[in-house]
Amino acid sequence: MPPTRTGRAYEGPPSKIATKIGLTIALLLIFLEHRRATCLMSNSIHSNDWMSSPNIVCNGIPGLTKDQRELCHRYPDVTISAMKGLQLAISECQHQFVWHRWNCSSLTPSSRTQQSSVLLQRGYRETAFAYAISAAGVAHNIARACSMGRLLSCSCDPSSYMDKTQPTTARDIPWKWGGCSHNLEYGMDFSKQFLDTQEKAGDIQSTVNLHNNQAGRLALASNMQMRCKCHGMSGSCELKTCWKIVPDFRVVGKALKDRFRNAILVTQTNLGEVIPSNRIRGSRRKQKQKQKQKKRRRDGRKKKIRDLPRQLYYYQKSPNFCEQDTMLDIAGTAGRRCNKTSTGGDGCASLCCGRGYNMVRQRRTERCRCKFHWCCFVQCENCTVEEWITVCK
Image (tube, one colour):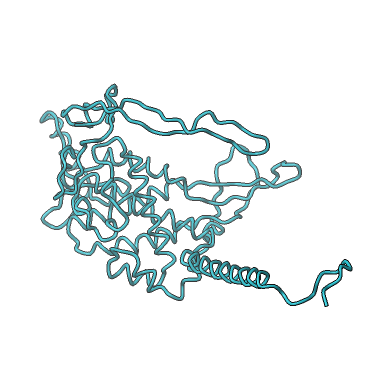
């Protein structure tokens, strides 16, 4: 009997089309749930959920030494944070030396850990900076990760709550420790365990590398900053809560760049001591005055390396980095962009090492003619810009 039009929906058996639609929706829901589970599993690699499988994480990091791999098996999450700190350090190194003949382009996180880079097996000024910035980057990233709750083995810095010293303020406002201070001590300790274990020989190379690692960590510690929050009715700031944070890493990079410029040449004595070399230049009278000052010292010895812990040390004269040399891991400056009107390090005269430069027409795309539409987005066009640039021959 055919259905009648009584206003009610027909409750007969479902059609083939409806069955296919229902099956498709069901399969789609299953697929989405599977993707959600897969994403959660993938994201757990960067969280604490993958602690049950440290072998997968540690075996996936290239270039780890035996000691570093053992440390990774015990603290896989901290090791991942350390590797991110190395990447931060390399990026900062490339920023600080962008207009230098050596621009950190040969450094990678894997080469920093396994020392496969020829540069890291030398004793140049650039080597000193690379070791210092790497040690600081590891400590910096781990100290922040601790306070953000990303690591299982550390949290906020507990020592700041026991510190009775007060920060210098413009007004005498009562304050107390609070918030979550970055755990600098834990970051520096892990940086030492992760990087210093590679230096065991006791020769001049290992001694200088250990010193520069510590100099990088001290550059971070000496630039720690204080953050405070006011409390009181209507912002009256009757009381402040303060905590310590690591500085922006750009601050650390600039500090180490200054120490790179004033790095001290060292040498090793017959007794195995590493001491600053005597680089005095000038008249014999100045040399004799310097010798008299040394004799007046109580111990009668030259100043040892431990007397200047914050300075960077090197023991080999750097090459000019002008020409490409794959054996020495030097990329050269050919093809590098330079400023023909500058007399500084970014100038073509210095960067091109006297080889001259070429004028090249460069085309790039940038956003232009941007308009704000209510509400609420900005729409831009892509404009092609052509300009002449100078590159080294």
